[in-house]
Image 1 (cartoon, helix red, strand yellow):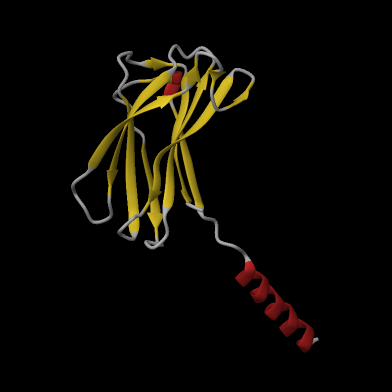
Image 2 (tube, rainbow, N blue to C red; image 1 turned 180 degrees about the horizontal axis):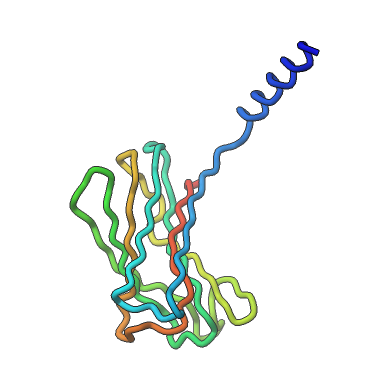
Length: 156
């Protein structure tokens, strides 16, 4: 009985050590009433421990078929661990093409798209990174936007 118990514990520890680590972070924030006001600026934080690897950073947008534009302008602001200063950049995300219609994946009248905004990015500091997302379109609030988010994955 004692040998069986020790074997089970050893086998469990072996299996636990073989579980691959997940190299992807994704978080989406729901837009209240599907009306993204310029005052609503979702904050998304994630931790980086591996400062050697390269990462791909995506903006994730989910909208309905009733969205009025082929694109969306999003301002992303990042604060690195230990810094009080921030760095911002605006992105023109193409959501539709005149010849193809809506881009991205669809389910009924809902479309989701992951747009690569920072390919092959190296995070120089370990710790928690905070991204703030805001829409900078002329229409305010921006109607028919359901979710906005961030996806970070190790580059292959």
